[in-house]
Length: 88
Picture 1 (cartoon, helix red, strand yellow):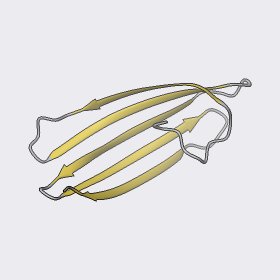
Picture 2 (cartoon, one colour):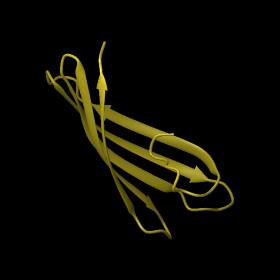
Picture 3 (cartoon, one colour):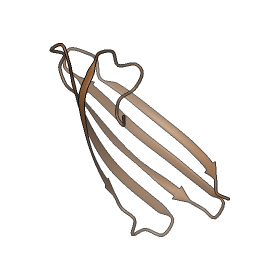
């Protein structure tokens, strides 16, 4: 599930994700994403906000993202990720 990490404890019931991508730029594809997860057993729902982008070069693709995870009753958490892949 997008926006749901292993650090979260609970029993997820439903999850909704909305993602907005811009594909009009030649090399860079930025995006914004929002995920809401509802839990069983009366736990408060969580929200995850993510902003990131992919840079596509001929044989190399690089992705970077920032995610903020919030759930009432818990401290907000921030995550950064960077990845790369080879295109064959």
